[in-house]
Length: 179
Image (cartoon, rainbow, N blue to C red):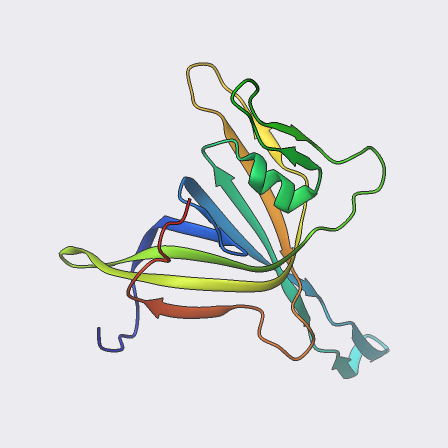
């Protein structure tokens, strides 16, 4: 596809957390984490004489995802805890993090793939948005009668100083499904 001024996108095709693939996520939100610069003003007799404002600092992004499945492996990647694989006689077991201070769980890279559309439907291309140096948080659950359960997870992306807050690429394929 030639470069265009805009690329209409919708639908989350895949989310990856350090390569672990999620194909059932249906909501994704990225909100910038910023620190507003302080403003100093010199006002004399009700008149603004001079002002100076420090720049706004971008620290990274806060990401929120909603997944339509319970994924113990993702829970372990986001919040720690212990995952014991199942056997023939007993299913898997996940024990969440211990009570007390939550230990940060590092995720090197999270990528979100959204479908690109044109006037005749999907183009077969994807916008891949990649966030680095991420920290997981506790998973939230929601259950409602006659509906499939949903889990919501949040991640803080805090890249090193002087690096970009995210990377956006137009790609032609999704990673090969490995799970």
